[in-house]
Length: 270
Image 1 (cartoon, rainbow, N blue to C red):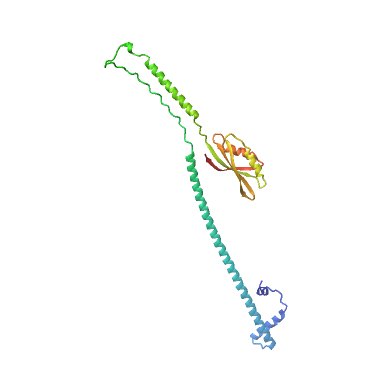
Image 2 (spheres, helix red, strand yellow):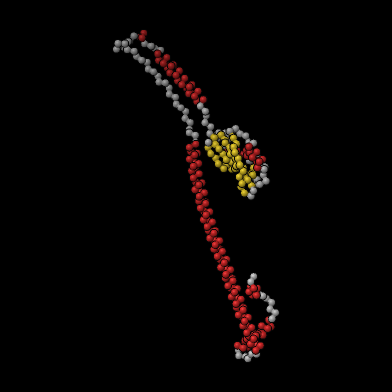
């Protein structure tokens, strides 16, 4: 606090009677009442006091205006900085949104390209039946019944059936040797604990203790969430016909002492 402000807030006036006397003499002089030398000195003191009061009030007003202007300039600068930060945040959000859209489009293309083609059973064609040949001798047909083969058509039908059976057998053997395409998926799971005091090593041990036909656990890591809490992010490969995401969530959430919830962070077809 400056000296002028301290003087303006002074509430104790020890010499008030002297100033009252000087004020009385001052007004008497203004009204034409003769004054003694002492009274003239008192009026002069009164005028000086009035001027001092006026100067003090003006100084206080100027200091208040200066402080107000400084506060306003500081407020304007802070508003400008906040507007700049807001603009930068908007730019960052737009960039993240565009990147997310690109990733979603790429994932859709990958899923379409990796989708297994529908299986179609090959169609086997039966061997054409051979028509009996008619022998001509010297351009003249032989009408003799002894030269006609009555059992020739039956023998050809048996031969066609034998060839067809052999082809079906060969196809079945080739199909048995061909490896069967098994649809698999890669799943990234987020396993969240109850609080920061949860033993994450024990939590991961419980998760990996789940053994299912068609389930293979992969790499894992701890990812910070906030307030000292970390979540377990673990990868696994499953066979689609044997293991589903619902089964995984049910098996993991059985460990209620360690696991709060399970989320699927990523799902990709292999």
